[in-house]
Length: 432
Ligand SMILES: *Cc1c(COP(=O)(O)O)cnc(C)c1O
Image (tube, rainbow, N blue to C red; front, side, top):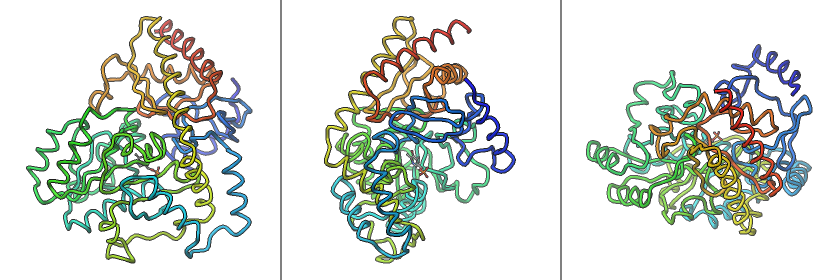
């Protein structure tokens, strides 16, 4: 595989951009080698600057649920561009997307658009604090809520991959208001609540965490959190930046039938443009400026081009329930295929799957929280990643990420991926 142009660009990039990338998860630091510089994408494929083609299972870390460069979204963006790129004043599209989000996501009665998932979670916590008049909040170990200061404590995703779950630059003052709990453990929450009664504004979590590799909630866990938060007057926030519009059109809250007080959204909501949103109960969202005292603003929030892409995406998902049927089928077929190969080779690596999200962990232990996820063999994952890449399958360059499937994956492509998996896994075991 010739990747000389990607190598040249990476060398150049390192002179001018920290680590050569604009987001750490894009570097291949955890798996070795050189990140690929992507020139274009279409359907299920990425194309790098050297002209190599890859079937890819990241889909821009989630947004491209219908595959890359979907004509419907491309046309909506081009049409919006013809009318100007930014106005800094309200538009009809913002009303339309707000109504649509409220109709799709059970917990959302009012919603504010922002430009990223990071902004959504930072703002949601501020609003929850303003609403309750309390300072502390609970966050789960290994969950990722973007790069806001108060979340970079036992953080997942790139922070976990790079070995910096607690980032320098976060003050002790900030960190002391973030209370940590293990995922899937209601007793730990009860203890924290007991020790900080009346001081906890919010509990935020990824209902189905994808940022320490995919983990599933135990039976009754999300409802248990709901009950504790209701009892204690704590604002329950589901961070559905990843799971929103993916696990179901109403996200994990629809799938599990548990309604939080607030929800944060991102990724799919922008159809590939930089968009985030936070919303929730009317009485909480009324605290947001200018209807209330909690300040939050954005020069480019609700940008017309971004709204055109997001609206087109959400309208499509809202009116095509068969998208989810097909995505679930793709997830099942692909992981069945991978699991069958593993079984034939006498390997019982853990596969966590929900809908169109999955992780293959290089351990045979059950993975259900941060501690168990850390047991996965990251060295083996790195070899597997490289072996798959050489066979034209582009995975997330970290053991601690979920993969995101799109409707662009045909049954034939699933077969191709399973075949690549078989020879990759054989190769890495032979060379062990
Ligand atoms: C990606 C992600 C974020 C951050 O979103 P950005 O748009 O990258 O700022 C927050 N929460 C979760 C669960 C995410 O997966």
